[in-house]
Image (cartoon, rainbow over all chains, first blue to last red; front, side, top):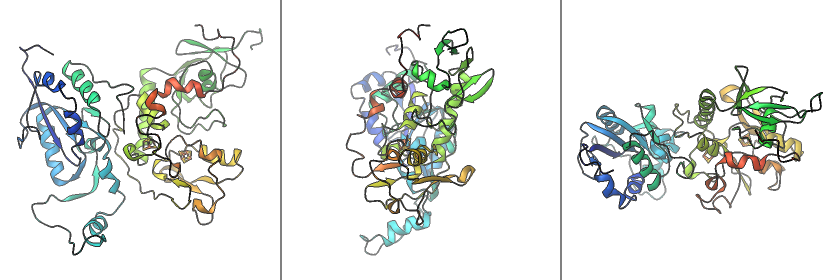
Length: 183
Length: 250
Ligand code: SF4
Ligand code: SF4
């Protein structure tokens, strides 16, 4: 990974209906980040705080789709990224947020904000700034085309490293036993 | 043995696999140390042929190897690109038909569905998820039934009826509405005579029939299929006939 003449690979990342655990796991590659940064540069990402995604080579998306804003961000990524990757259990199959999928959305909000016993005088938030929740949480591939999936809750730093180094070397990413995990 | 007194054998992906009369292709293959992915097949029970994950190709036709009688000279393929794709799709369909959230599943790491998927390099179910609504049955003091993960293999049905002599479980409905039920008037597990020592408690390949209170005793990451892929372990599960040690020399 030391061909300095090569232009840097532009990478965008975001967390949709996720917990940022996948981003934390990404940071867990530790000192390998230095090696990585010789080959890549970040576009929109919580690491840069750039708010909108420009043309990129790779988009890494953590989290599934639970509200209208998630759909907009996902489409922005799909439009701008040559390769779009679903990172982590929530992006791959909806994950923990999707465990509300068998509950009626109205009843769910009612319980969380109004009838839940620890709440005094709750009400369902209705600020127009808030993105509208979807009736079901969806994995990314149900909304846009996804090129690669990197499962795990979160995928380990080693799995993320293997995936990215394969991709940067022009190989089809392959995890294999020990790195492929859904848990 | 064939009429000429030779050991009968078939070809599996180019390797010679000897067999005893009456053995199915998967039985002979596993006994000889060859792995064919499978889920509803269990060496102690009559083959069921429902999950189709053990599909192989014989003379251009695809068949479930758990119900296919081995025949002398037969040529069987289990590893072509086309079959691998079929195995993957069959397993992916099992994932989207239920609710499989492995990070919060007691069985993760010990689960055969998950292990078979790892072995097939399945990174995502890729299909649209059905997200069915399947309430759990927590009525029994010692046993939890997590229907969301049932793959309808009927192993618990077979074990409860054939080994335990209890008939605790049954499948009901057809097609996409087919589901596992509990044979009690109330439909609740607490109203059956199931016991934690029953065979039906052991056979579920996924995380449906769970002993309460022990699910996370072994941490995730240190479980059976975390240590070794299922393909490397499957042979250990296969009942072996006495060998002379040189049957699989090709
Ligand atoms: S039963 Fe297996 S595949 Fe399903 S959630 Fe549990 S570990 Fe995952
Ligand atoms: S509960 Fe388990 S053993 Fe019974 S049919 Fe479902 S998957 Fe098979």
